[in-house]
Image (cartoon, rainbow, N blue to C red; front, side, top):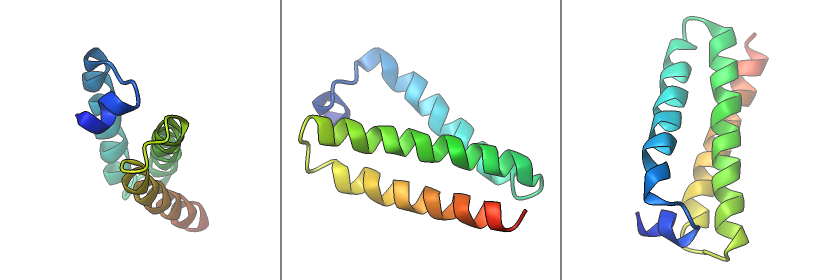
Length: 86
């Protein structure tokens, strides 16, 4: 929570962000069987973590940026693999 507060996320937005993360994870899991949904979920997850990286960089929060950056790279790799396997 301190990292989210540092970038200006209000406590009321935390449940919304959590739902988005769970929806992305669920979409990636379902996407194992139904590839178009997996690709769509991967795009959403990449955009989510891109927004997280931008939010951390915007306020110069160097502690939170690497974690979000690693998850961004991992989700971008999953998107690339999903797109290639279509």
